[in-house]
Image: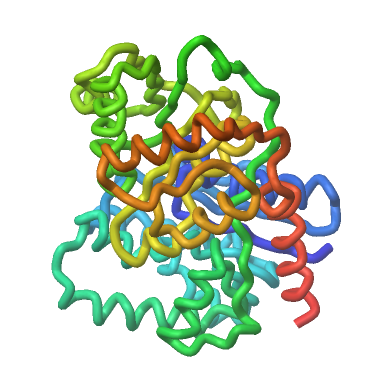
Length: 363
């Protein structure tokens, strides 16, 4: 049976998105018994358990010396994981440290980028010196040229690689973040007042302060509404979302237990990495049947909202003008989303990844 290795730097027990985008795909492949599938990832305890090859990792959310040492120490496990494998699917940029040895061993490389990680480091403020980026872009170009196939989350990302590095379009596949259709946990929509939700982290590119200001403007004109903030960053959320009534901050597995609201905030802003991105929570809103409030600037989000009538793209970032657009939209049309578009489903993602893998075994 042909062997394939799924490799990531993430701890799949701590990273639900990585689990959904990598482990769930790998598990379905294994269940279909077409391939012998192995998974290489980080975890609290180093070792081999069935088809799982786990290296220890103690540093999370940081790009530092310790995180690099953790990966370097993983090589002994990695050599065991890659033994007898023909295809290696690498998920996300940080796992690039293994690509040179994968290429040396003449394996077929599928690089599932999940976005522009180097640009995101700058846009998020993790790295502040642009002078350092000439080196990172050299690494990026090497990774792209070395890979046999590159998975992009959007067509805009594929276009970016082609324009910036001249990457052969035949190597570029566009596979969005998919979402399994989970049973609706609760329906909080269509009540006596408007119910909004904000799902996810409070990083600046999700624009939590604009969400807060939007809600404050609604409060000023006496619109009856509530806001549920679903996040792990409870204390910061309580500090940010003040100045109006009916705000509830809590933690919840929204992906596995979707809740339908009247509207969900999906504001994104901040550099090239966001312009071409695909926010995971977008699918979570769609699968819950929650209409989406977005702002112009993210190509794929704008396209999907317009093409499938999934909500509204605000044309302005002034809270007062946004409120005017929203009230017009709300009065004229209350979106009802019953089914997630096929291109956003887990089944579509699985199908496209399977096509990439089969091309690799033929190549």
